[in-house]
Image (cartoon, rainbow, N blue to C red; front, side, top):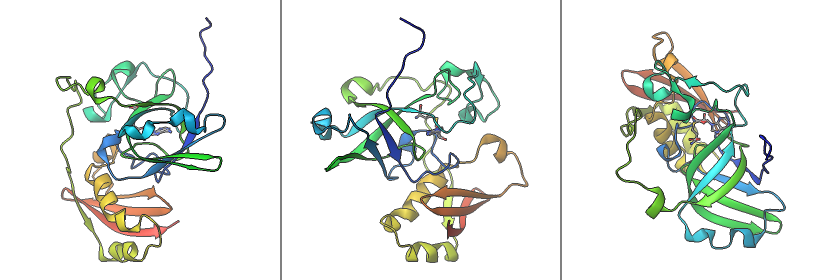
Length: 237
Ligand code: SAH
């Protein structure tokens, strides 16, 4: 067997995360964010997915297509160690791996089949828009959920670390936003921002208090004051 293997991309993810900044560090951290996996031919056959709806969650194998370079690093600085301490790449979930393969458990909301299109509607994911998908398998809690497993150097993050506030301007935007997710946008922003999406180096910079992130077709401007994330303004891009 040769040292390289060709793998087939079976589909593509469509998600509100249009840039890496703002994506939760693991899939379960921002529940409620929707997404779809569109399966490509010849894998978009109904029988290839038959009975998948009997599972609530799926393992998704994907390609980190949005990394800046394909260079892997033997040691990385995980955000959970404040971006200061290094650990081995294989002791991390870093994207700078020899093979840019990501792995996430996502919630399966429903499967939709219309004509040639096969769509898996998902939520609680951490996938950048347009992520190439290479495999899907059911998540099996009896075997995959290990209660006594240790979290190593990455203990479970506290829930809702930051309070999230909205300016009256941003609330007005949300009220008038014409989008199928309009009713959910506020709670989605609370989920994302309460986890503090900032990279470690940026938290250390006292001058940097204003941030912008893209979600859907929106530019979300927020600021940090006294442990509170404030959505200052939202504009359509
Ligand atoms: N759950 C995955 C991802 C962990 S790293 C795993 O364990 O393999 C998490 C980061 O991956 C996110 O914060 C996001 O910025 C990044 N990410 C998600 N999809 C990506 C993509 N297609 N290309 C590059 N980075 C991506």
